[in-house]
Amino acid sequence: MSFRSPLGRVLGMGAAKAGPGHWWAQRLTALALAPLGLWFVFSVVGLDHGQHELIKAWIADPAHAVCLILLLVSLIYHSYLGLQTVLEDYVHGLPKVASLIAVQFLHISMLVGGVYSVLAISFGAAQ
Image 1 (cartoon, rainbow, N blue to C red):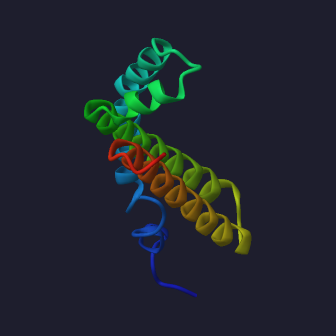
Image 2: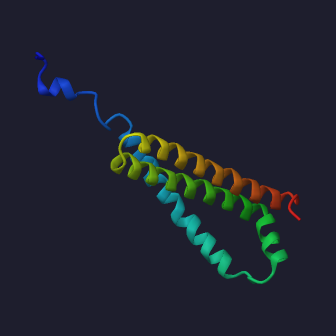
Image 3: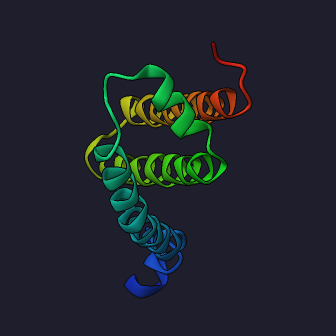
């Protein structure tokens, strides 16, 4: 038997601690993805798609490289936040922990690989 009120038992529990930060991060990444996504679509549509060297030269341009890295960071972080929310809400028990770790590892791997690829092309390391 507890002498605490029902309100006293639930205060400090639940998603109220990290929820607003997560919500804002997801909205800010979505806001960043709108202009970056439009830039990417309009830039890629104007390229000649059969020319490998032309695509590499496009990525090697510093302005395009910076925008591509910003797009990658925003897109992958937005994806991670969305999948994290789905897993936390709908998966329970040990598979939840394993899934969260796997999703985080996958997103970090994609981010490192994508940024490395853009930088390697930009600095001429990729042949």
